[in-house]
Length: 226
Image (tube, rainbow, N blue to C red; front, top):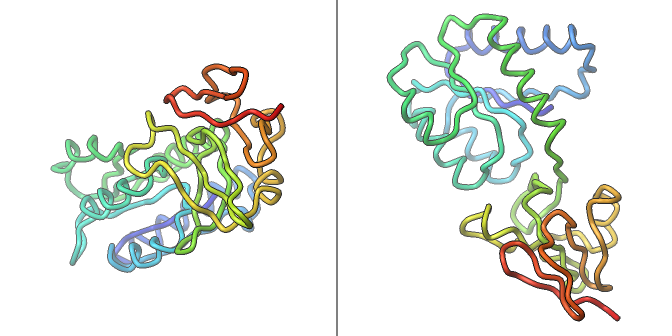
């Protein structure tokens, strides 16, 4: 599990880290499988986030100097609809805005150990029901939600990932540096089918299979080889 803490008060940051580590010990999760990145402000986090988007959960202080946590969360949501957001705050004024960015939880300071545990359990449950792969574009490392994929198309030594237009508003195609054979090794058997030497299709996104094409739920299609 990869965790980011965005908090400008060292006391709260240290307390949260201690709770996370204690939870991992209770769950017998190896320290190698819990990666915690600590940031003193929103700007510092967003600078790193442009290159690395593989976080599972962000613990975000709302009231920080510079950009506040809520504005930071809105910027994150423009690029990532899946990462879990947990706000840490001393006031409840922002709860309505939290619905807009689909916050998982609000933790009121001083933080309570059992409430932090509840959030981590929710994130763990979400990881078990969702499947991701890590791929690379020209500019960044990307955590790709398998459920959002229609198909992957080979383009030379690289690939184009087509995303479901119904669930991924805006950018529906992503060019990645991995080749088709590399991507195949990352995907779970049974979830995808190779319809053509240049295409791998996610079975869950297929609407129907015609003589020459596979048609997806959002209306897009790819060819089927003989």
